[in-house]
Amino acid sequence: MRATAVVVVLFFIFQSAVAQNKGDSSLQVREEDGGSVAVRTTNGVLNQGSSLKRTWYVLDDQKAPAALDHAGVFPLLDEKEKLQYIMPVGIVSPKQAISAVELRYVLFDVWGQRLRTLSVTQLADSSTHIDFRGSNKWVALESEVSQLVTVVSFVARVRTAEGGVWTFDAGRVVPQLQDLGLNVLPADLIPDEQRIINPGLIYWTYSSKDGEAVKAAGVLRP
Image (cartoon, rainbow, N blue to C red; front, top):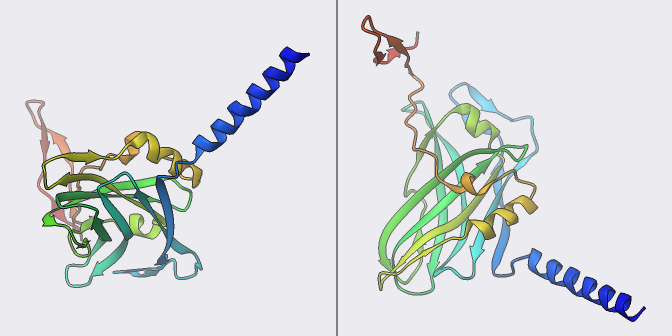
């Protein structure tokens, strides 16, 4: 009976430890309004019948040499180029002098499925705020921006003024995102290849007479 009581006590102690370790208090998740899911395109406004709002989740790692705030992405139509872009925003506040910082943005659709992971780096000797607005932009397909509902942003790497490099821990980040109902694995936090998309061109490959694959030059769509 006494042995049974000891086992029960140990069980509850173990359960309590698991519950305490499930949440990482040093990795804070903040939710921000990312605006309406309605997207202006060259063919009109998509999703205008939806009341959904985009959600920006900002992961602020207390262990990082820099804090992150008001970070996310939004679609922007360049009417002159007739191209759709994804634009990043974010404010980095160094906790010490730094020389470079990398932000990553993980994009998800309404079902919590990952669309793309983007990365942007700024080289700046700074101990004050660094604004990532307008620091970069990525060409996107209308299908991407129309499906974009959730964005997760976090500081991926920081180079301090002394030359040290801090890197985020995927093992701590992934569980936080999964708790938000997002389908994500550690590999999904790796930035996708930066694609160059020209909607006015069609590309194809074909086999030449000698059997070698040849990538043809693009042809304009009619």
